[in-house]
Amino acid sequence: MRGLARPSASIGTLLLIALAAEAAPLSTRDQNPFLAATGIPVTLSARNPEGSWAFAADLNWGSTALLQSASDELLIVDAETRELRVSIERRVADRWSVGLQLPYRDMSGGSLDGFIDNWHEWFGLPEGARPLQPQDRLLVRYASATSMIDERHSQRGIADATLFVGYELLASATSAARTVVTIDLPTGEDHWFLTNDAVEISAILAAEHRFSQDWSLSAQGAVTWLDQGNLLPHQQRDLVWSGHTGLAWQATRSIELALQLDAHTRVFDDSELDFFSDALVLTVGGRYAITPEWMLSIGVSEDIAVEQSPDVVFVIGVSRGRSR
Image 1: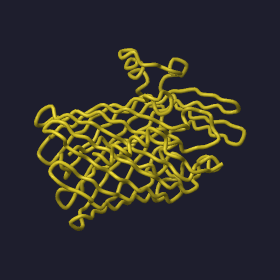
Image 2 (image 1 turned 60 degrees about the horizontal axis):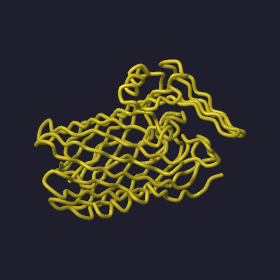
Image 3 (image 1 turned 180 degrees about the vertical axis):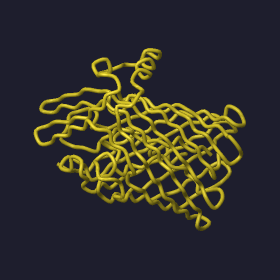
Image 4 (image 1 turned 45 degrees about the vertical axis):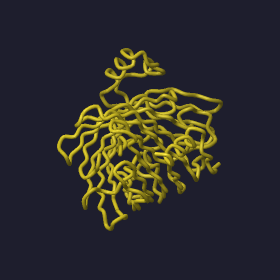
């Protein structure tokens, strides 16, 4: 049954911080392959571009290996996903900006399983179903009384494009806030991993504040209206809440270290599986000023709500035309 999602406690906390919150967030979102084609927004800057144009290219490279079952449901996800999202944005007036995001996605068996196993061993992280799964295999299977998905073949291609309009509410040397409306268009290639075959709209509030020379806070809250897509359409909800909050420390003139929490409410009803429930993801990383205009971002995400999102995601990005 489709229904309206209520914001969870974690999302409510993120929204309150946003209202209180010069730190650009690490550009990421939950890389759950079942949510790849939905319109849940990535993290956005609270500022319009400094000049006329801003550019960014962000890669999220994730690995998932899990086995879950509940009542009449069975889920196996053994997959590696890559999403390269290219964004361009232009300031069109003092407070207004317009932009476009073009994602390219790849889902395959990948090559990271051995490295991820070592990663979990080094840091004492839970391995879940990883020891039970063959290395570098692709299998995404979901079976219930009413649905069956069995994906064993690699998928790659252009995904749904996102248009957005931003309005800057506040911009000072220490604080900024803006509202953004995004529209996801069904321009992706015909596969549930690449397109939701629907128009979806998000309303976003992003804010940031530098409360000392070295420390800054960023936050975002969003609500997304989902049209009925082509993946588990009778279980998909109409409304999803999402958000993030991040803390950054200016370690040197060129290096900023960051800690970021991202969360969202569940997208699919009528499921007792953790992978279809609310998610909470921790990203640790930072940014390096290559030049006064170009920035390099690097981070690693972990599913601190275990098995409710991919095991690990590597976040790498370059951007130009943003303040820092």
